Image 1 (cartoon, rainbow over the protein chains, first blue to last red):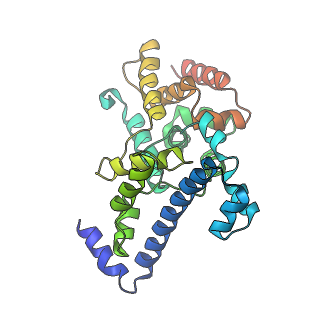
Image 2 (image 1 turned 60 degrees about the vertical axis):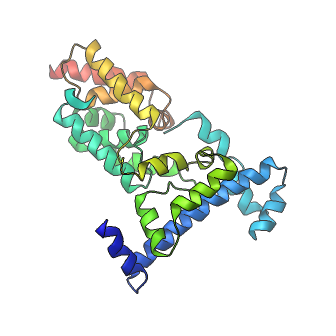
Length: 78
Length: 193
């Protein structure tokens, strides 16, 4: 627990390690949420273009990132 | 389950656990076991894998290729780091769960939210169902071969027998027929005996 407390006090300050670690965690969280919501949008019938617009990225980017992932993940699992 | 493991096999599982933790992808998957078996410390399994052209470096590259999704599991360290900037990961996951069901994130790519939640209650070092099966099959292989203990070579045999894990995919993608690998391992055992 004290480790987490140390980290907490460090990240609010100027320790680069703690600050960067928080950035990484936030990115992971954002990536997870994006994957979930892209999937959700597809199930709601959104086009790749609509999803791309909402995320303010190119259609190619979002399509490349998500279009083929689901089937691949199903057959072979960890 | 681990009481009949040789030190060698225990060490292999520990290495797999470390690999999983370091990749932020705990629980342990079959690919982490494969990586651990390819370590020079894994004895016979290592030799057989090397003989088939697979070393740790190659396997790492394959894992990166296969699981390079934009998402990575959120672990205990992520939760701690998020707390430092005022984000309570539990609340976030709970909110998401309200709308999408408790295991919503699990069904998306490689993000097992439920696993993450459970893991963060300090139960680190768990296995994916497939990796657990590998361990069970290793035990069965040992019994079949009338060995009294489970060594790393039995883990490799279990991994081959399981047949559908990411580990086997790595074998197949590298032109290795799992059955051949099994035979090579058994032949080497004979010679060593």
